[in-house]
Amino acid sequence: MNCEQILKDLREKRKAALEGIKTAATQAELDKAELDIRKLDFEIKEAEAQLEEEKRAAESARTDAINNGQRMDPEQRNFNPIAGAHFQQQQQQRSGEEDPYDTMEYRMAFRNYVVNGTPIPANLCEKRADSLTVVADTGAVIPTTIMNRVIEEAQATGMILSRITQTNYQGGVKIPISEIRPTATWINETVVSDEQKMSMEASVEFSYYLLECKVGLSLLSSAVSLPVFENTIVNNIKTAMIKAIEVAVISGEGVASPKGIIKTAIPGERQINLTSDEINTIPGWAKVEAAMPLAYEAEAIYLMAKATWEKYINGAVDANGQRLGFTGIDGKLKRFLNGREVILVDYLPSFDAAADGDVFAALVNLKEYLLNSNLAMTYKKYFDEDKNKWVHKSLLIADGKMADSNGLVLVKKDIV
Image (cartoon, rainbow, N blue to C red):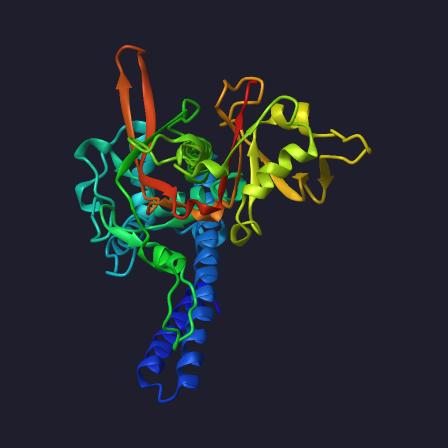
């Protein structure tokens, strides 16, 4: 059974499971139907990925054969141009459920737009009800296939991006924190503490900020195959997007960009000052640990610059020879301070480079940071007359901020 048939069968099973929810007579039947749907969603996602991989491999082989002037396989030697045109016409007849930005036709049109500057045909520039609303001159919507790969690879390689929480709420609407981070309460509980009230009443509101990632694609040529072209696009956008988003997550001002962790307003008792005499001592970092509330400490990690780690923490010992920080290798290099993982970033100043009162490290549960975006990106190509070269850039609408800043401790430099 081929992937297309498997995918069709799985979707039919999911439709039947949805009917099972409507007709469930008991809670047990309802739970079973919901569990079946979750399992089928996972299997459908895997089947879609497998089908896309098969299509990509077939297209790559066909394109390479054409570019290299090679003979087709015996089954392909009686190629009929009319039949090919009919197949292309069938591709154009997309069903209502199919993503218009994920068809081979649109992917090829997008490649021609980037490489040759050929405008994407109007019939392919469809807009879905939930699609990204952007200004008219942003160019072309990046194909879903490319965008999914960018997101997957960015989350796998980004040190910060892979740890934060990603949401897709409507901008300008206050979202109760209790909806984002639900809590359990006893049904008959009548007395609600002040802390619970604050938690239930707290909310977060997102804006629409435009992220521009300039990418370098000067090596592309008109003869490049579609798979190579898409790999190049993925690698360039992924690198640009990771850096831009992670810089904003750490130090964004919250005006024209997401609000960064170190720009988040927190009480003075969770802003710890360390002097040059304290930074390489266990008692110094114990002050930081003491400031972290117990409810948030389980998943908190340290963020700091590499120079801070190497010069003041890695290998430092107290009078009894007890180490402050240590490095372990368990499949990959990991650094630890007070038993917590340390993530080294380029987006914070080192202790030496920081001015008096500057934040040089943070103790934070990154899951409490929300990046709000549907991660749909558009692509634009234009000619820079001043620099006499083509400029490629991708655009993304996003916002972000700490949903619950109680799990954040900022460490500042103190010059005494």
